[in-house]
Structure formats: C-alpha cells, structure tokens
Image 1 (cartoon, rainbow, N blue to C red):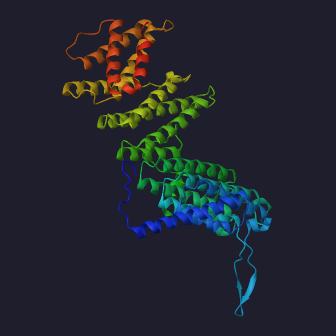
Image 2 (image 1 turned 120 degrees about the horizontal axis):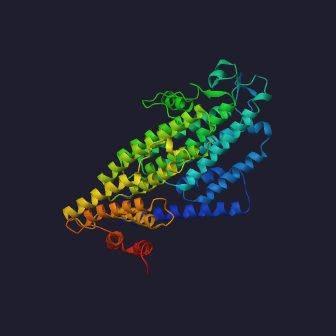
Image 3 (image 1 turned 90 degrees about the vertical axis):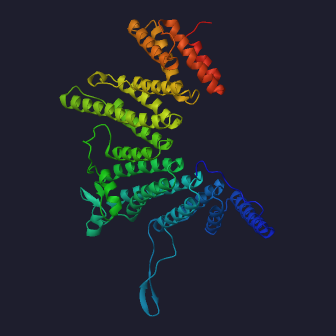
Length: 491
C-alpha cells in the first residue's frame, strides 16, 4: 500500500528463526534444481507442480514464469492435433454400468484454465507483481488464439455457421449454431477479468499495475468485439451474467446514458470517463485515474485528427458536432482539474494533467476546421487559478508553501515573452500587450504594494522574481530556472 512503512519483525525466537531458515533452504534448493533442468531443456508435465509451488512462495521469480510458459508450449507442440482441441471421452464399464469417463488427456483450454487459477491465487496474495500480470496476459493471448482458430474452423463443421445477428450463447443453446467452447470461454473470462480488475482497484485505487492491466483488458474487449462483429455474433445472456449485462450493452452500442449521444467518444470510452471521474473525485491524488482519463481523450483526439472528411453537409455536421463535444469535454475536465488544485495545490497529479489539457487544447486549435467551434483558453483559465493561489499565499504570509502555481506562471509568462519577441509573429502588438497584462497580474500577486509593470524590462524582472522563488523552493532544479531566464535575456 502507499505511504505505509514496512514493519520488519524483531526479536523473533530461535525456533522461529530456524523454521524461517529451513524454508529459505527449501526454496533455494528447489529454485536451483528447476534452473538446472531448464538449462537442460527439460520440458515435462511433472515440472509444472514444482513451478507452481515455487511461484506461490515467491512470485518475484520471473525466470520460473518463463520456464512454465516454455513447458506448456512444448507440451502443446507434442500433443496430437485432435487432443489439442477436443477431450477424448470413451465409454467405459464401471461396476456393470455404462458411463462416460473423462479422459486423462488435457486440452489446451484445460491447461489455460489452470494457469488462470494459479495466477489469480498469486495476485490475491500480492497484487503488485509484474510477472504475474505478464503471465496473465500471455494466458489470455493463448485463449484468443484458440478462439480465433475455432471461429475459423466453424465453417468446416457439420453444423451451419452463425446466422446474422446471432447472440453469443443464445444460438448455441437453441441448437442453431455449434458455438465453439473456446469462444465462449474466452468471452466469459475477459468479461470476468474486467470485473476483477475493478475489484483490485477497490482494494487500492492507485495500484498502477491493476490500472495498466485493466487498460489492456479493455483493449482486448474491443478486439473481441471487432472479431464478433466480423462473425455476426453479439453478446448474449449465456455469456454475460446479470452484473455484466450493462457492460455488454455498452459493447453492443445499446447502453442507456443520461448524456446525449456522443459523437466524439465511443460508448466504451464514455463508460471509462465516468469510471475515472468517480475515482478522481474520491481521491484527487489518483495519478493513474488522471492518466487513464488523458489516455481516453488522446485516443479520441487521434481519431478526429486522422479522419478523412468530405465536403458534404452530413460530414460537416458530424465534424462540427465532434469538435464541439471535444471542447465541451475539455471544459468539463478543466472544472474537475481546478477543483482538485484548489483542494490541494501541492499535489502533483492534477498539475501533470493540467499540462495534458493545455496540449490537448493546442491540438484542437491546430485542426484545419478549428474555426467552426468556440475554443477555450485553458492556459488563461489556469493562470487565473494560479494568480489566486499565489495572491492568497502572499496575503497569509505562507511563503514557499506552493510550488506548482509559481512554476505554471513562470512557464506561461516565459511563453508570452518569447512570443512577443518573435519577429515572425502575425500580431506583435497584441502579443506584447498579452505578455504585459500577464506580467502585471503576476506582479500584483507577488508584490501587492509594489509599483506597476510598464514595459518589456519589467516583464523580465517579473519572470526573474518567479524564478528566484522557484530556485529557493526547489534548489535541485536551479539550472532549469536559470535556463528559463537565458531564453529571454541577453548575456
């Protein structure tokens, strides 16, 4: 957990110490034995239980996860083609009765199911192990491979292919379509995985391992949706449980929402925005939630930039609607951001997202059709917030408390001064007036009783004042603040 110091046991008894040393000896003996067998390329099924035992004791043994994957791949390579996909179950007589007994031959699906159980038990005991999440990704990639292969072989089976609009799980239950078991298992496992990712975040909402894995699961769900669309298959009640049907409706594009139909975001992205909004409001210091929010926004911006627009009324209306919703989302995020900054000006999570919002607004402004919407000056809005915080700090006499507002004002003023000095600017007079206006506002916050800023030299003096404050508050980056000044002053 974050901000919790690890407490190591002291004054343990001699008996407990001996037991601990014995466990260490057993672990190192097993580890060395497995490492030696791996060097000899021994890939036998009997090794898997030993690997499971070792990884349960210490999941940080990354090499053993690799060894486990190598063993599984080798076992599958040696399996007969029929056994790799189907379970042989011949009838046998047991106590005079004819019964069908499951064969001892495992399918790849059986192996992968066991791997999911193993990684689940490891993550439950320590949910911040890189190797366990990497191994889990590998398992799902193998499940996807089996599902894609099974869907590709559907047309070769005796039963007809999936009819158009077939809901996954319904047609198979009705006997209309022999739905492959691999597809059902993959779909159910992915939907369950998303819910389990949410459960991990409920335990620690700043667990970036869980956030990254959840982001990957969401991407895989999108890939699965594309694959099912190609096969004319939709999610059905046989695949999704009651708790998952709402999410499935989003995946099928039929979700109900209080907000108007989004043109800029996909239904899944809308759901993720709501999820991150709730996470940020619970804890403004949740950097991973801010990052996920920016990740969604950047993906939508990329689609808007790369789309090829035609000079038609329908395309123009769609383009203008998407652009308007994009600016609306930036405005909504700015409101959430300023609330976070006012609540805790010292927390860096919101300030990093502020940089993203400024960058996103510049991307929208640079679009060829940007003039069709009313833009929002994100930088100016943040300037107002920072001036308010700095002025309040100076009035209360709590100097050196806030660092980030000073840094934002310094970079904003530096940009304005450089722009006003740029001979290639289309409106030099307007740029100089903007720089002078910002410098006056900053100086009024820094020196309420001081003289007014009247010229370019005063703008630089104002920047020097900000950099002097930053150098005192953050001496490790003194060189960076010195470089700021060198960009607008002559030697």
